[in-house]
Image 1 (cartoon, rainbow, N blue to C red):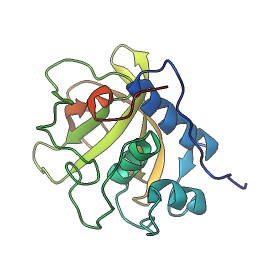
Image 2: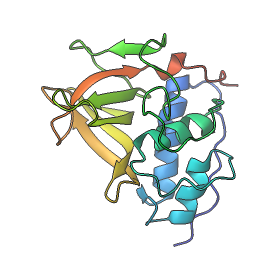
Image 3: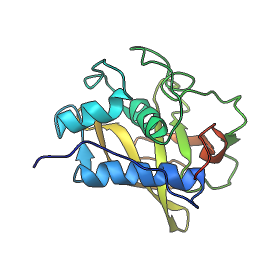
Image 4: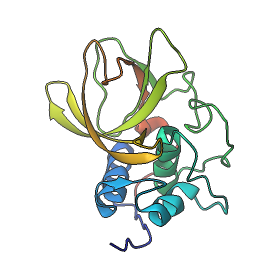
Length: 186
């Protein structure tokens, strides 16, 4: 299956968070639901390059790379890719001191949120993902990278509770993408 060049247009009347969710959904839907270094490679490589002439398609894991690319395609000016940089404050270009950060305290993320999950016992075991749909009762459809071979981007489903994923990581908080500096919708 040949995948076309990814093109994303801003739409009038949508919130910035809705734009983020739509971009993540469109890129994965166009790829047939999955893209990675090994699946739909050229499409994946182009999408995550963020306009740079640098191949970062083999970097593991790609969760932050995927989020960075979605933000870029939504109009955020992202810093150049640096292999080995931190997840938060690096690939995701803002830290937990950013005004968009919301700490989890039994509250719920919303569509477009960039969620950060982390193991309580192993802080380096962390992950970011995008909420693309609220399925109700604390369950969300997500778009995320870093599974499979470490570069695979796909849809998943998660429920807020004692843990937020099958690896026992906890929801620490999220970035409200209405407040991360994206340009306004037309």
